[in-house]
Length: 232
Figure 1 (cartoon, rainbow, N blue to C red):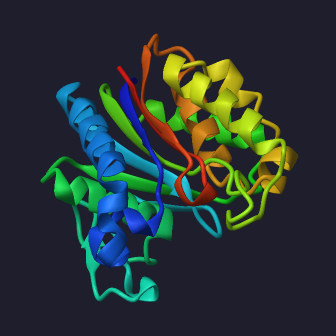
Figure 2 (cartoon, rainbow, N blue to C red):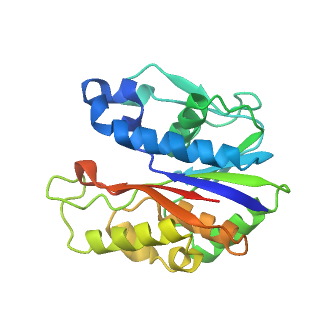
C-alpha cells in the first residue's frame, strides 16, 4: 500500500550543472524538493516508484539510467537499484533519479513513464496497481504545472493557467485524490501542464491510503507552475 509520496517538478534547471550561472535562482525549490524526498524516505518505504511523463508508456523494474547530455551537460544518473539496461529514462524520470541520488537513496526503485495523453481511468488504475506492489510503497511523482502563466512563459500567457495551477496546488496540499482525478486532460494539454498524467497516477495510488498532504512550495518561475508537496 502507499505509505508516502513526494511530489516535485521536473525542470532540467533543477540540476545546478544545467542551470549553470542561474542555479541560485532555484535554490529554494531545490531545498523544498530535498525536504520532500527526506520525508518520503522517513516513512520507511520498502519500494520506491518514480512516476513521470514520457513519450510513451514504459516501466523500469531492474534499474535504469538517464542522461542530461541533451541539455548540454555530460552528466548521467541511474536509479538506485539494479543495472542500467533497457531504454533511457525520460527527462522527467532522469530529474527524479537525480533527486534520489542527491539523497543517497539505496532502496529498491522502479520507474514508470506515462504519456501526456493517457486516459484518466488507465492512470488511476495504474496508480492502484503501483500501490499494491509491496506492503510499504513510496512514490516520487514528477510533474510541472501550466507552462502558460506569463507572457514570457514557454507557451505564452493563457488566462486559465493561474486558476488551473491554484486548483492543483490545493489538491496536492490537501491530498485531494478526487480533485486530481477530475483534472481535465484537454484543458491540461492546452495549458501545457505535463504533470496531469503523473498526478492522476498518484490519485489512484492514494485513493484509499488515508494520507495527509502538505504543500511545501508553489511558484511559477519562468512562467511555469512548480509545486512541491508531501503526502504522509
